[in-house]
Amino acid sequence: MTLSDLLARERRAERRRLRQAATCAALVAAASILLLGLSGWFITAAAIAGAGGIAVAQAFNFMLPSAGIRLLAIVRTGARYGERLAGHAAAFGALARLRPALFRAIAAAPPDRALALGRGEATARLIGDVDAIELRFVRLSGPWGVGAAIVSGTALILLAGWAAALATLACLGGALSLGLLLAHRLEAQGRRVQRATGLLREEVAMLAEAAAELRCYGLEDRAAARIDAAGDVLAAAHIAQAGVAGRIELLHAATIGLASALALTLATAAGAGAPIAALAALAAAMTIDAAAPVLRALAERGRLREAETRLEDIFAAAAPLPVALSQTPASTLTFDGATISPGDRMALTGVSGIGKTTLVEMLLGLRPIARGRAMLDGIDIADLAPATLRATFAWAPQDATLIAGTIRDNLMLADPAADDARLWSALADAALDDVVRALPQGLNTWLDDDGARLSGGERRRLSLARAYVAHAPWLLLDEPGEGLDAATLARVVARLDARIARTGQGLILVSHRPALLALCTRRLAIRQADAP
Image 1 (tube, rainbow, N blue to C red):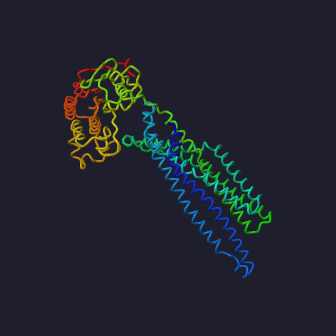
Image 2: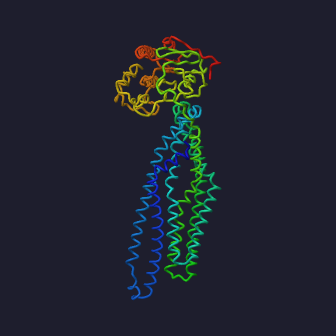
Image 3: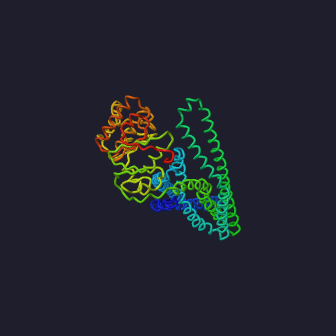
């Protein structure tokens, strides 16, 4: 699904709220024009009646127009709140579904594209670019307000003659046309804002991840200078964008003044009395004023289009999922000519950098794999859906990532249905249960981003326990012993040996630690010719 398709679907899903917003926008525009036009007529007529003497003033009926003014004021205020509530409710409902769809598109992108998308850039797309899309939904009611303004404004101004009405419509058309031209010529400024915002988010996220190293080597000032430079670029883009918005606002204000002056002049020339001329002038002003949401949307068009372009790139990159030729965990694995079954233990060996981790990621579908290189139950891995691969392999990566959440949250990523007994069993097999039991809230202990409250060895063992939680016939363990002292490593090895004997799971291991390699009965040496 493309972004355009998704947005069209969301418009259909939110059509009830969008209709409410459009109706309220039309009421706001009509009530505003009628209110100001009637007020102008009432004030002018009352002044003339007062100047005509006591008899004329007493004969002047001020009750009915004043009641009408109050009613219109109430309708305008209520409709304005209704428009905002309905418009933002539609926008928030759409965005709540757009962000998960975007995340799925990132996950479905080709592995090299998805893995290359940094945390800061992904955050910029999921937050900054998606937020810009909110403007699309909030301002969908704008054209309805303009339409209602044209109808109600023309109806009032016609009381002063056709010339005044046509002049107002000409001014409105000219303002919209010039606004569109300005927006087209200055669109690049808005695009710069959106790109600069994303770059600043990416820079901050990247440097924040390296905060400890920056402090260690005294590079805080250099990091701050990089963020300042990115901030200066964004500030310059905002200033340029403010210039665009200022020009469109100036166009709007000048058109209001011109339309009002023309309506007043033409109404007077047509012989309309002072009250009607005042009504026409103010109605003309409010007719043009109703175009403000549309003109402001034009000022933001560059930002919106850049956000849509950045998001569309992600949706366009999403690869179609392979046909699910199997949805059940596979049992027999054939890889580079070697056939192994659950219960077998194979070590992938080779010098550092030869590509052992890359091969593991190929088995998981995280990287493209050549057809014919690996088979599950006789089916090429390249033809298998991700759901099948995830049900077949339980993975503990070399650089494990933990989410900001509880220990329970991190473990249940492998199986949201796992009960506490399974969680504690997995922790015990990873030699981490005693550590977790000693924590104040046990499984409910909160871990900061990437498990910062745990040591490096504890984070690795928690990743290992997470792999144990999954019901999968194969364990893919990438350097599970790194960062562990000899005594802890011995416990991990002994418990892994006991777990495999108990569960019958197969093991594919990447490690340089002799104690772990001793668990494996088979080895597959990765040579340069085999490397990805």
